[in-house]
Length: 92
Image 1 (cartoon, helix red, strand yellow):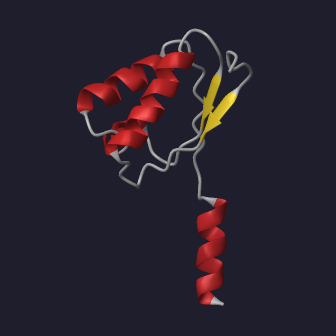
Image 2 (cartoon, rainbow, N blue to C red; image 1 turned 45 degrees about the horizontal axis):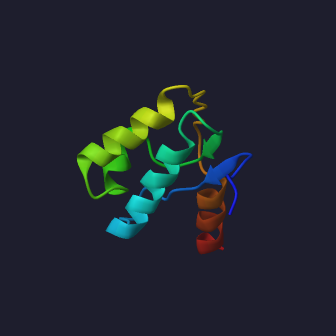
């Protein structure tokens, strides 16, 4: 299979512990695309909570380091639309 091109988008759920295999695949993707291709990641967790995504603190730091090195980080604040809709359904 040829070299992947174009943007890749990831949506890691920070509140769910990943298996060692899942963490390894995520890290490999980040490492492979580092300085070669673009990568868009959205997360509901700040980087300080990413230790829940990876089994190993060193892997967490290495992944974040690669992600932020040439990054433009857009941080959105405010209430989650999905959470707001879920709460609305529960009270209806």
